[in-house]
Image (tube, rainbow, N blue to C red; front, side, top):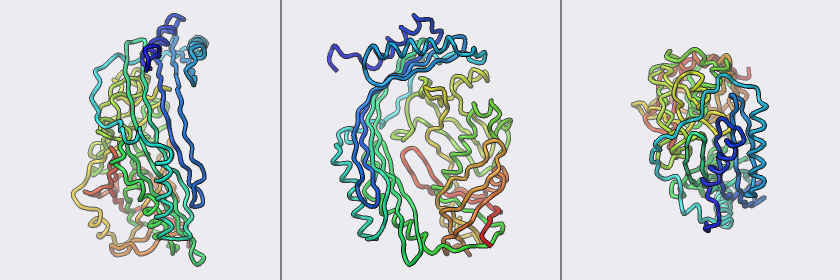
Amino acid sequence: MSQHEESHLDLAARCVEKAVGLGAEWCDVATGSGRDISVTIEKSGIQMADAGRGEDTAIRVYVRGGMGYAVVSGSDRRDIDEAVERAVALAKEATPDPDFRCLPQPQPQPQVDGLFDEAIAGMSVEQVVRIAVANIEAAKAMEPDVNLSGHVGLSVGSGALASSTGVAVESRGTDISADISALIRRDGDTGYFYEFDFGRHLADCRLEQVAEGAVDGARRFLGAKRITSRRMTLVLGPLASYGLLSQLVAAANAESIQRGRSYLGGKLGEMIASPHLTIVDNGLVPRGIRSGAHDGEGTRRRPLTVIDAGRLTGLLHNSYTAGKAGVESTGHGTHSGGIGATNLRPALGTRPAADILAEVKDGIYLESGEIRPDPASGDVSASIDFGSLIRDGRVVHPVENAMLGGSIFDMLARLDAVSSDARIEPGILLPTLRIQDVQIAGAE
């Protein structure tokens, strides 16, 4: 940056000063710039390779609790000043909100290592294309007629946040990812699966091997058969368990609970699951994909135990919901006013997944898929798209046209095992879970 260029933090602070001068009672401004590369795979070939750079400034203003929000792309000073003026005007016109208390005060920021990788920052479009090509070639070597789709991409960014309360923080980060789906058709049968990898550091990834995992999965789902309806044991593999646990933590969003839109409303402090289940949300894990010293409002991150041995012990708060509830923000706010989880880390059990599976006489192994309860009632009705029949401790064949149903609370109460081993992604733990006596609807 030359001596004439304005830093992200200086720009954010200048915008805050202007907003306050125009009548903002509270204001925070997030600024940032970055570049990204995206390579798209379609029909087992490179469809598109794209690279871009951008700068954005987002201004949030409160007047009598009413909020005004404006976003502008680019670095033109007139455009940014006009966006500040627009945000202030919107806030003055907004309906006053008596539940708004204040924006966060400055806080000491924790040190979180490993959020930026020079190796990713220095990558070119050609290097990302080579990763995609390596996946295509590896997949075709396994299955010449495979149909691959997906993408490989990276982003590199830096930014700052300043507020009228004195918050002034800067950050920078990198991430790279690949997600690829494989479709195999053989003798009138179809097998489909997907795989992914991601990280903040290139050394944490095995991006060239993602397609191989997708093809292996597609092979496993050839030969699916129908099953009859009955109550069975449900074993959730790492991806499926994450789908369930992420939905559960999402229901602990304080805004949804305060608005009466969550099945966890009124459950704080109560047992909602079996004692086998403990979940910590931790945004401070070094190299974690969702790690950071602070949230989108400048509140410091800290580990939050959402469920402790089956008991709901923590809700995810931003500054608004925390002020409304008279508690401290948990550091899960977004700059636009939302709430989001970070790195989910369930406590592991005492036995490996293979032992948990070996004890199942009649069950379903769900390899992937979200178990998404109804937000208000907690009722579950989910298609089993990547499931296999378990008989006498062995996975025998994939299933088709099957569904699972019930109440999320009944399912959580019947969770009787969490594996001691887990799939480990940057910052995130994905164990295997076992749930007894689940209603499975098959095609009779």
